[in-house]
Length: 123
Image (cartoon, rainbow, N blue to C red):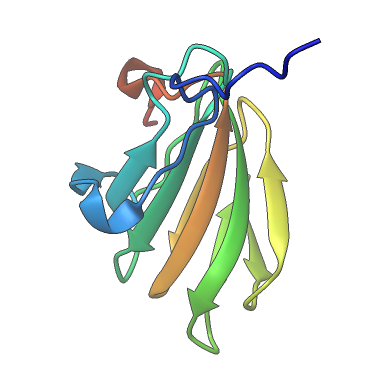
């Protein structure tokens, strides 16, 4: 049997965050990848957190924060509790949890299902 040539259609997806425009968000500036990839049920964000992000919550989205860089005094506010964080820690924020980052940091955020800006709520 003859070997099939490789397909010219890429089935895998790649994102270069340097090529993705940042957009304002309650936390600072987000670069969002895979928004148009039907095979992936979520989105992946690299977010530059401003000095103090705005407290908000989501009704349907679950966010997983992985802290790439942060200052020594960085914290997350989760349902009113201040949690010290450091680089390479990870926090899952389920729907309904009021949250915000405090301090400057760079965060990789995996959002499930796909990010929807209409699911950002403020008290």
